[in-house]
Amino acid sequence: MTISHHHDVLIIGGGAAGLSLALRLADHASVAIITKAPDKDGSTYYAQGGISAVVTDQDSFESHISDTLQAGAGLCDPETVKFTIEHGPENIKWLEKLGVPFSKEASNTGKRKLHLTREGGHSQRRVIHAADATGKALSDTLTNHAKHHSAISFFENHIAVDLITSEKQGRSTKSNNQCIGAYVLNKKSRHVETFHARHVVLATGGASKVYLYTSNPDGSTGDGIAMAWRAGCEVSNLEFNQFHPTCLYHPEAKSFLISEAVRGEGGHLLLPDGSRFMHRFDERGELAPRDIVARAIDHEMKRLGAACVYLDISHRPAAFIISHFPTIHARCLEFGFDITKEPIPVVPAAHYTCGGIVTNLQGKTNIGGLYAIGEVAQTGLHGANRMASNSLLECLVFAESASKDIIEKLKTPDEKNEIAPWDESRVTDSDEEVVVSHNWDELRRFMWDYVGIVRTNKRLERALRRTQLLQHEIDEYYSNFRITSDLIELRNLALVAELTVRCAMQRKESRGLHFSLDYPPAKENSVAKNTVLTPETNLTNNIKIIK
Image (cartoon, rainbow, N blue to C red):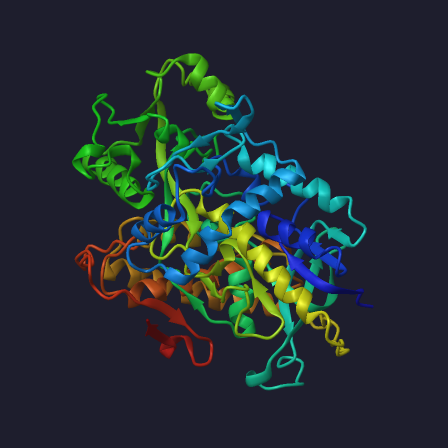
């Protein structure tokens, strides 16, 4: 018998976006949070840099807006940028009231004030941080509050399989489709449970695990994007994958991220011979936006046949380095590198999904009752390239705006919807798990080779054919065998890979994070358009370009 759960709001994902939303809703609704593992499994926990916001008189909304628009290479939505940045200060104050231990320094008045750092693309110091482990401090604080609130129920070791919509249940058409819950695999019992909810929120993060090298944790498998697509949502701009320029290069480091703040505080990028090179690619040098830095490193590594480049901050005082980057210093020591005395070997790695599910300023999708917030959403904030530390800001601001919309809608009477139980009567346990592991490895390797930092039409065509073949195998496997967590994630990644390739094939220019050797860089004043995919027609014919 299928186990059923009933809540006002179902939040899929337990990072900054999901936890912030849960806390803002908890006094008004019953909330369920689904996470694939115990806490600390999302990208938020590993974010080092910080949260960008205007919190001093020396800075201004106009400056932060201008920097963001410039980094976005003409594709940011100005209204979204303005909305997000103007709501930044109030969200920082909210976090301070919750007790997030941000780094402080002495001020002229004698009171301690927020210590601000500067990262690539920012013209001012406006990044609020907790040493070099902002994500951990934020995640720990939000989780602690959420787990002590009686209205919030955590379902750890659960992974969503698919969204439940009124159309799929045969109760409506596309025009009035409503999301009414989700089928969720309990990883411990291995049974699929049904979650009913008046409102469902996808806060599942990005899809960087689709690449061989990534700074993200294992759970970044594009689940929300894939589920939303299958439910009937539009997705946009998935060709814009941000590669973080500096991840620790070591076979056992599992792409440990070296924060952008290291360059912000004076770190130099060096070739193996010890010479600096970034000034040859951009006048801002190491403080250029991430796409420029990542392409420069990729170019130099390929030109020289080098396995990595180096990031050096050892010219700064040792006490300064240890106080500002304690986590990075300690982690590098574990692998034999003392950053106070020597350069760090680094390589680029997939880091952030700038595209995603199309939403409005309240996080609403084109399906009633379904919201998407955080990295899974395409709000228009990031455009063709995300500026450093705007991501956590987006999580907080859109959690706040979505909460207000949901609270208002909860005032209307609830329509009770019966949901058909999950049917696994015609499947068996698999005796060929090697199929899953092999396909997983193949997918991530060809995405890295063909849809990585630098692309060509031919590489994209090869990648498309492979995604289609893999999905055929995966669908056949999915239809015949009892589902597992690995199979769910592989199914989602393969779909997101195809959507990413199709977005990339439609962009006939090099812009922001999408760089193609077959097309020249977009002119500065050229008209920028989003790439939008809609599930209304077949994947082969469903691409449209809109302003």
